[in-house]
Length: 464
Image (cartoon, rainbow, N blue to C red; front, side, top):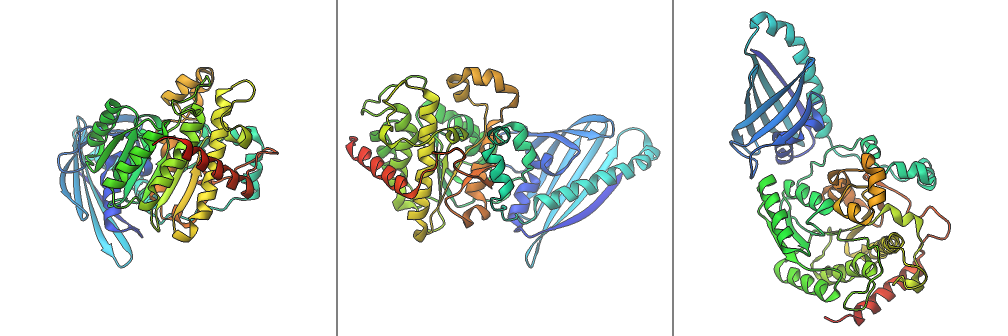
């Protein structure tokens, strides 16, 4: 048997270290020998939970199925794998320090064939892999650095449209080399609109793993039930409520906001993610152009209605689109009634308005301690992109991000203490970026005030 033991010190509290380390789905974040990891048992992380790993063992690839045999949060856990060729037993202990946690990792590995001679030959390789893994764990559990401020080089890349757009791809996400989100959200309530598919669903699953109480809003009851079931299977987190509403309707937007006000005493995070790109110009039953209604007016009505439940430390996250870089805000034509209708243009203009609205709220609510950010997820492979932009999807499919990659910055903005130290920024891959790169696309304060006045007037004209 080969026994290895080492420890890492982290400034994080024991419960954060425990939940991140013992969830072996996180192993690819810190152990370079683990090529993939998946949880194979439904429900909460706990005793008898199983994980399947694909591990690089020298030149070979081995599949190991680990089972949690001891689960004592936040102090200790033991996970055991009994494969065809080897048996592994990993014990992890979490010892409180004056400022943080010492993680003591003991790993026993026993080869089932080859005898002691083979074990001795492999021991240096196993020891090297162990040191690399523990170094990765130390980095993952380190204190999160403050995101660097915008600089000249980043601004130049943003203004150079092609290099800037390359960052929107999956390769751009990988190049950002982002650490995992470790910060726990136990006791915090997060509202996510558009939570039944794509980026919203991925964000909801990730936030549930971090322990957040979720309030999910979607327009299809069956799909809400499906995402609820998926969250329960993935994380066992049953602290969630679902509300069905079509947010292109201001009456339904107000009604779901009232239901949330009635059921929740405090909202820590509101994620305005619901959105859609429509190929044809159509009006809602209330007389609003659909893209304007769903992508801009509804987030305004919804968030303003929820303001009584937002307090110091609460965060509002508005999901925009990189396409907004190509469009200016047209106050005189918010309904896209002039000229030939172009769905992508109407969508981008609405998202441009949402970024301007985010900056207005950040300034207006700063004295109340409410943080407001906008972000864009990059180019993401979602059902909405397939249906709304089929030609773009066919051409760019190999380069598109996964929904999880697109949701990463949402999760970070919701959970990270660092993200709460500023307000009014526009984020991609946890970095603040310019909001305008083309002449004539900047939205100045006076125009933002006029936009808010127009949204308020439109909201007043809607029934309900």
